Image 1: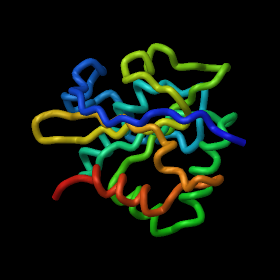
Image 2: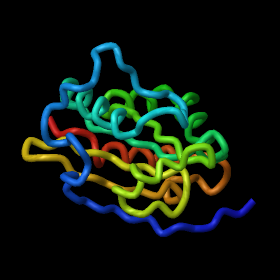
Image 3: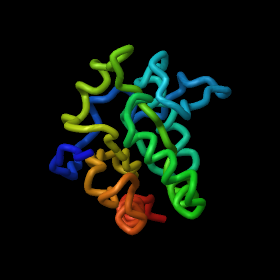
Image 4: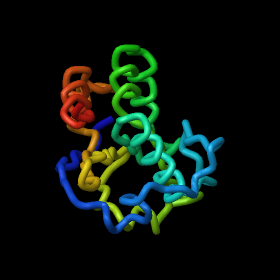
Length: 167
């Protein structure tokens, strides 16, 4: 099956347009957890505030994966990380992972309208937590594929290393 090629781009923008990203959020309850699946019932604005709070507390950035349970390449990404413990460690050691649902059941239009346009799924956004504010990286995942039914370990490693927190 051939996928439509989507031009990838990296866009660094100030996240002032998203609520609560510059102040230390206090609204997130201590017991709150982030979704590990694409859950259409979740509030991505609240989840993002929680993810940024966790990222600041642990000196990591936020890895936002937008997709859905209908998305075969989202499943490939889950498998990619599950089968490669070193990649899973690279991701989890440097990023707080947030999955945002986009499906017929809940398109999360209001949340996604605040972000750069997505032309294919899954799509990755990285919130880079900085001392003078946050910035956003937007990345189509097709450039990280291996040309078959998975992702290229070398390409994904370079991508994750490029945006991991600077000590």
